[in-house]
Image 1 (cartoon, rainbow, N blue to C red):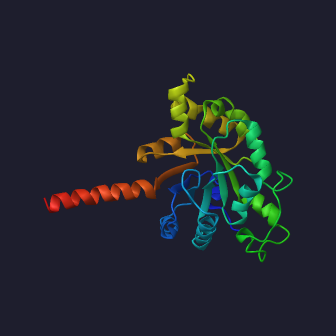
Image 2: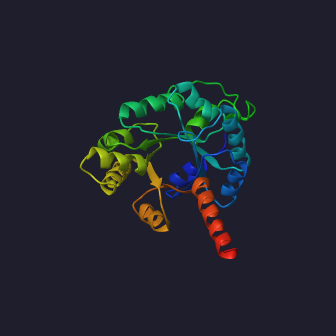
Image 3: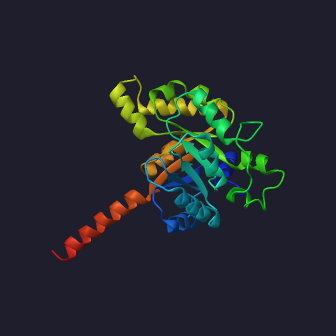
Length: 255
């Protein structure tokens, strides 16, 4: 069983360095690993992937020894743990607003005695049966992770109960969705207040937390507040900004 870099960082009290990817770009996995990222947030919620594309990409994650934190497009139990069998190091589940939902997810993706994940043992995660052995289920529980996204006012109200759920390894605030709902539903708190409540709940229950950071100042601020799963950078904006900059160079050069 491959050792999780993200979990190693969290367990040693450090910050895991995460970037994002939403398209089939194998070289991105190689480059992220080369430049010291611990994990790539593979977005399968807002981006289109076939099952075979995901399986192929996960092989690159193992080739270059970097965690895949796969944001899932489904809550179906068998599909969730199949991502782990196919080689994802962990799952990030969108819109988890209640402890009941968090417990359902633990049941889906953790083996007994923590959860009720189905056993196969012949996927990439166990070397296609060659490296699993009798310790496979314990190894999987130790080296794979479940991160739940806190993206609604209801989730903030329930954040302490969610953080208390055994088998949840981390809570990740989604400022886009949460900010939209704060603006439209007027829940009576700000994103800063929500983040403070999330941080306090995770500290109380010994869970890691994190969120995307827009710039270096926010990376520093959130790390100082105790965040251990920080994400910045992705191919979408990188390509957009590259094309914008190159277009401007053309305009200056050939005006």
